[in-house]
Amino acid sequence: MDFQTYSIVKSLHIIFMVSWFAGLFYMIRLFIYHTEAQEKPEPEKRILSEQFVVMEKKLWWIITTPAMILTVLFGSWMLYMNPILLEVPWMHIKLSFVVLLLIYHFVSQKWMGEMQRGEFKHSSGKLRIWNETATLCLVAIVFLVITKGTLSWWKATLSFFAVAIGLMLLIKLYKRISNRGE
Image 1: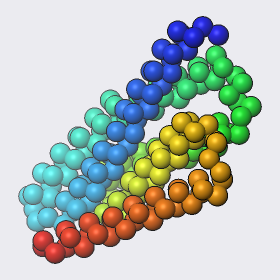
Image 2: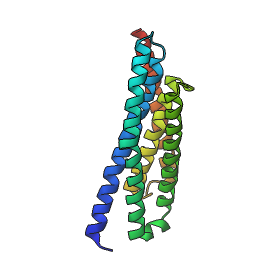
Image 3: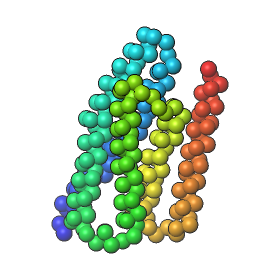
Image 4: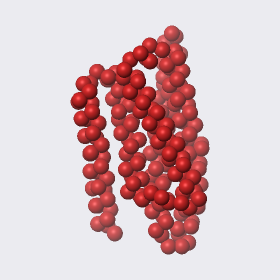
């Protein structure tokens, strides 16, 4: 294996992974704002909705989806160059989280289509929780890659759920603070 080529491919994988996550995080924020705009009076509701549709389409098709494709492409290339990675348990777990992220990506894409058709099936609170799902996947993937699965399973699981509970508490705190301002 050519170490220099592998390092370049790995760097590109990380760059596009960061871009993919940035797109996912911002997209769901746009969904939240788009959903909340439905409570505004006309013509503000219509103007905001039209703008959110444009922003969502551009973010999704120009940044988020290409970054997802390139993340998977460069990640697959790394596995091709270093197939021994497919024999280690932590990589199997990481790839399981990647599959969850791909499902998350396409569910989010479906929701974007619904919103563009004027169908708002999810509250801003549910969307905030949905946004944290990607955060949990990111935390799990980074810890798996950095520690190479050396953490004990019970500590890793406990930490994962502690982060999830912490995020939920922060969402509730944010909601409480923002409701006070209204």
